[in-house]
Length: 193
Image (tube, rainbow, N blue to C red):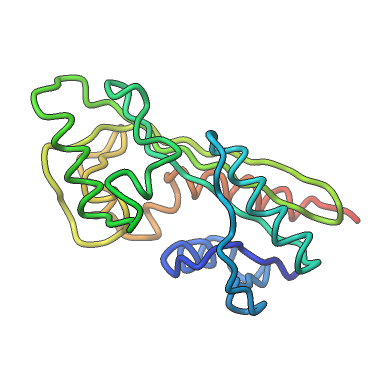
C-alpha cells in the first residue's frame, strides 16, 4: 500500500518509515511534487491534523495521513501545545523554543509534561484518527544529541534519560508519535477495502 505522509520534516519521515517497515510504502510531499504551504491554522492538534491530511487528499487525490504534535506542560497551562513548533517565533527554531520553555519553568517545581500526537488518515474517502501520548518531565537543561524538537529537555516517565539520549529504535517504542503510528499500522494491517 502506498501512503503519502503530509510532511517536509525529514526527521519525522525517517522515524515513521522505520516504524512502518515494508508494510507500507511511505511517500513524502516531495515525492508527489507538493511544494504548497499546507494550512495549519486551528487551535487543536485534532483539527490541524485533519486540515493537513484533507488538503493533500483532495488536491492530489492520494491516500495520505498527517500528524500534529504538541508538548503540553502542566504548570504552563498546557503550553506550548498546538504552538510547539513556533513557540519562540515563526522561524520554528528548536533551540529558541527549548530556551523559552526552560526560562518559563525557572523556579517552578512541577515540571510534569506530556507529548501528544494526533494522526489523521484519509483513506478511500473516510477519515480515521489515532492518538499517542507519553507522559514525562521537563529537565533543567538539555541532555543528549539525538532526536529533534524538544527531545533534549524531555524525560519520559520511568526513564532516566532524555528522548535525545535514546536510540531511535528505543524512542519509537514509547514515543507519542510511535504509539500513534503503532495504532495507524495496526489499523492498516487490519484494513479491508
